Image 1: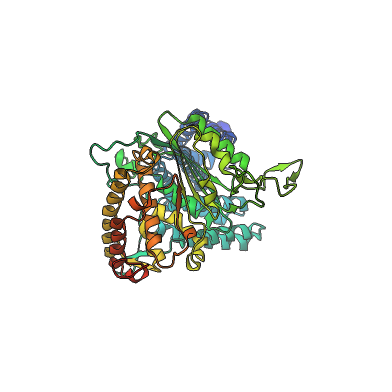
Image 2: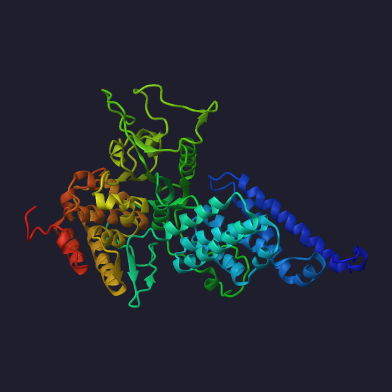
Length: 565
């Protein structure tokens, strides 16, 4: 109510408008705050609650659009309050994406975040003497940046980072707050994240071309006619990041960021699907497109990891695969026992911070005991009762060679090199080379050849060459007479087929590269691949040398026809 106006002076209809708006606003806040109490795992529990929250926000958004004039004059509605509602809807879409792995929801989050900036909803915040409002604006920027990173809108990310930097400077000068270091750290993290790719693709005018590495139409080699492979589908994936000193932003390490994109299809813009372009209204559901459901776990404790793993295992549909991706620091065994079992080879690190007993972190009592804060190969044995596809990127990845297939279900482990040449090792903070190969083989190949940039025309030519290479690798795998059947059982799924093909390409490329001389520098797998049919195939070696010649780096590779090993 404005000025000296009393309630009696306001027409009944307008008074009801204000009352209804207040009810919707309170209800929406209450439901939104309840979202953080929902369990993060399990597919079923959250859906009805999310639906209710979304319905209320949709009503609230449309209500303030229809009654803006009354709300401006009678309620004193401020533009930053409209921005807050739009920001919450953006967050809802983003969390929908995290829960469902449906990339189209990212576009919806983007459209709301983008409108806030275009319509300057938060502009007046700078003029109000309320630091908590400025923090809302800064958090909005951080969330918007995450969505832009996931949509590969790198040019916009750079603009937003510059704006955020100016906002942070203004905020810290005006309010002399204690969280200045935290916000500066946010800026440093996102700057490092943007610079993490080791190779740039350049246009003729030297502007950077943004390439997408999600699954696109035609990017997966089709199966040969009559080829018998498994009918399994990748349904669930756990993406776990626990590497010390790796570039990260908002609980996503660069390895996690790359792997989650390798398990997603290219997003479709819902506005173009529903002919609603230009309007800003919450959409209900995008057309169903099968992406595996994902859990993103940043530095989980063992108990957290095991809880999510158990939930995924429990809800895995029939004829489906569970994928576990581990990007983590290696944990090595301390002593040798006479019997070498699945807990005697170490594994990868889990977070110790939150695993506390009686107020103290439990330490090992003696050398004979196994490391507690470690995911050992034996910890995964119970989950091999269903089809399991494991990727381990770690300095102790080879611990997972010591698997036993107890239940006869399809089981494959792809294991990273455990040591790299120094020039590659020095780059490890910007993400692992092995994961880079699984995400973008051409980016990784260019990187080990010391290239900092590649011209767009040459890049597209090399990608076209790789499409033929992938087709041939697919045929090497399916035509091999000695390959373990587990590989073929996973080959029917497009995501897993592409990962297996990229794994073989990575192994073959590193074997031919002159810098990679130790066997520790090559990836391995469980079960082992027949080398002559796959990673040491003369046809594949010929293709790799052709790619090296195309990029003018053939001198870095062994050419059997020219020189002896």
